[in-house]
Every structure is written in C-alpha cells, then in structure tokens.
Image (cartoon, rainbow, N blue to C red; front, top):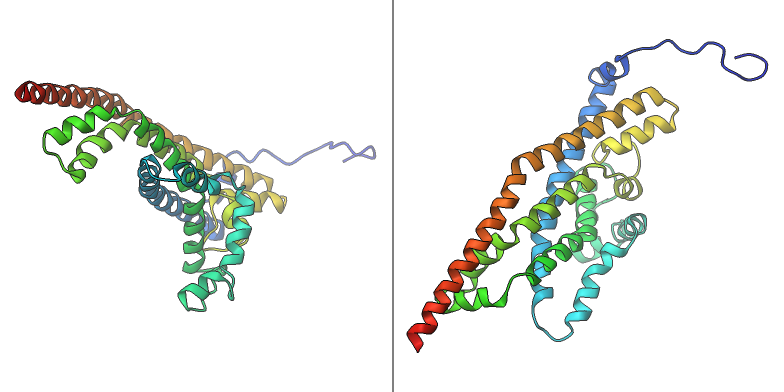
Amino acid sequence: MDSSGFVVEGEKFVGVQHYADLFRGEAGDRFYNALANTSFFTFTTVALETAIGIAMALVMHKSIRGRGLVRAGVLVPWAVPTVVSALLWQWIFQADGVANAVLGTQILWTSDGVQGAVAVIVADTWKTAPFVGLLVLAGLQLIPAEVYEAARVDGANASQQFFRITLPLLRPVLLVAVLFRLLDALRMFDLPYVLIGPRKDSVETLSMLAFDEAANTRYGPAAAYGVLLFLYVAAIAFLFVKVLGAEIFASSDSAKQVKRRLRRKRDLAKEDLT
C-alpha cells in the first residue's frame, strides 16, 4: 500500500485453496458439523411444520364459531419478526422461564447441546407452521364441497375422505409449501444465532459459519462457505423440482379424475333414489 492508501500489490490468487481447506482439519470438522446441523434442522422442522400446518388448516377450514379469530390467532406467529420470535423464546427457555416451570425441570435450553437444538426446532416450528397452514387452507377452499358429498353418498367415513380425497387433492399445494420451506430453512441464521448464540456446535448452521468467518475478516473462507451453501440450496431445489415436478402435474390430473369419478357416483346415486 502506498502513501495515498491504494493497494499496490495484493495477495496472490489461491485458486480453489479456500474450498480445499474447508474439507480438512479443524475447518473441515466445523464445516461438516454445520452441514449436518443445517440438514437436520431443515428436514426436521419442515416435516413437523407440514404435519402441524395441515392440522391448523383443517381447524381453520371448519365452520366453527369465531373462525375468523382462530385464523388471525394462528397466523400471528408468522407475522412476528424472526429476531423478536427468538427473543421471546429465549425468555421462555430461560432457567427460570415458562418452559421449565411447565415441565418441572431445570434444563438450560439456551446452552450448547441437544437441548439447544430442541429449542431451535420448537421455536422455528412455532413460527413457520402457520405459513404451511395458510397455503394448505387456500388449497382446502378450492376443493368443491360436492366431492365430499359424493364420497359420503358412497359410504366413505371421515378418515377415508381425508386420505383418499383431501390429501390427493392437496398434494400440489403441499409440494409447493414444502419446497418454499426447504429453501427457507436451509439458510437458517437469525433464529439460532439470537436464541442460542454464535459458535455453538449443536446449532451452528452454514449461514452462521459464513457470517462468523466474515465477521473475523476471513473473507476467503466466508465466500467459500457462501458458495457451498448456494450450491447446496440449488441442488435441493433442482432435485425437488426434477423428481417431484412431474408429480405436481400428475397430482393435478389424478385430482381431476377423482372429481369426475365421485361426480359420476353421486349422479348414479341420485338416479337410484329417483
């Protein structure tokens, strides 16, 4: 650097050295741990959020008293900013917080360990399950009531209607919801960072690792982590669309076939009654 502050000669080009360093030694151990945490949080939270979201949508879709209030209450967690949600759950998971008081235990939820990972999963599921519920609710409202009427005429009970009508007709919506949540969960950063803290082995994700490297002015490894995270997200999205993209259109066609078959049965039932 000369007297004017301009760089005269910089560092030499290292090629793929930063990428090679990520897979060996202490950096490699930290990278594999962050990759495992990212994958575990992603698939665990998405599975829980999908199941809970479907249950939320079924409740919100029912014609019950105060349905509007129920829908608004269910969607409140999704409207809360992630950092605010993390601070709220940090208060709940304190040593003398609500969680320990309800469970009657003295677990240090916000410390490094399995309990920290559980706290992150609970907090993320609470916040984002309403998103899945909202998408599923939109799909439920598109299913004609006559389809269920025809099924009841055919003698289908509630369980059969759910697994043979509701889920097949909701499959395209569920696939889209799961894809959105996968892409969002893979870049998880602010929730574990605020709730548990940085440099915690049990909750450190790839986004947190890249941020930590950049914050310590190790921009080369940070950029390498960022690129690897991008490739991971892109690969998941490509595989999801490639493998299940055709399933979406197949589900749409099968849904139409289900509707036509049930309408035919309903019409036949009406003819028998007359």
